[in-house]
Length: 370
Image 1 (cartoon, rainbow, N blue to C red):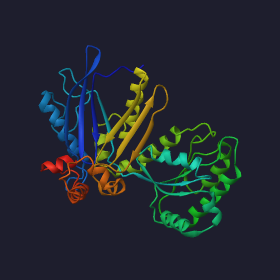
Image 2 (image 1 turned 90 degrees about the vertical axis):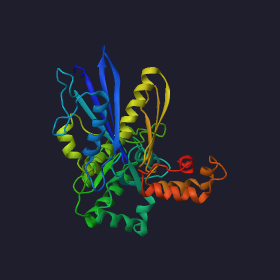
Image 3 (image 1 turned 135 degrees about the vertical axis):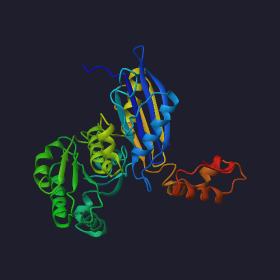
Image 4 (image 1 turned 60 degrees about the vertical axis):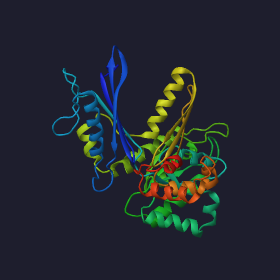
């Protein structure tokens, strides 16, 4: 069994704020020592996530008087005999652009409905949903949109589902053939990524058809039976794609991992799920965890030994706030505010906050609205 390390630095890079916490082992127990935070430096003029992270670590150094960075500004690993540095470093982030996913399957009320839940359990958005009727029509605006999306490399993944275990095979194979033809005809410069999470009996044929034209990943069926659901394998496949496709787009992240990291960077929603699930198992509780971020909102529910259910939405308290407000309705916001706060002030703040997520309220009314 791997020996426990003595000290850890845990960091989370958000769209607006980067936060760092220091944990250390005291008398065989881990204790929270200090935390620091700074504005994230993803955008111009900085465009380097390490800058904001380093500032948050400096905040901890000043609080604890414990050196954590060397003169070059990189992390001291491992901790030395004088207590300088740390033994482990872990980074999570919610600052990545969500995956753009298209769902393809047999029936919207069954496997496709489960597939949508899978997509909403990580940092991803459903761009379009195609059921078997869409393919039988053999054309139309929706398929034209898919062809254009493939040719312009606008999609990050296609999630193909359908058929319970022991159920339909031929229809899902026919859809796979149509999809392969579409990819061959309209593919862009990037190899399309396809995740197959349907009937296991169809896997060999689906692999034979799509494996030659796409980056195909085969996982367990999201709907093994009408009484059973299985989100974990498909969600893990999307999380892996997120790390492969979106993580490298964060400015400075590669250099940060190479210079500081002893572990991969994880999506923040995934690590929140692990934490809530651990607490539920450890203490026999039913737990709901909520993460309100600038770029998105994540809910995690866990009950005992059951796998955690995770729901994310790309509507946070910063970017996307205007669209979130329009869908929610002004009345449902204003009912929490004093009558003298005008509706136009709520709309103005939402627009300002969407454009400038780092903005802090300067007036009492603005603070109430936030």
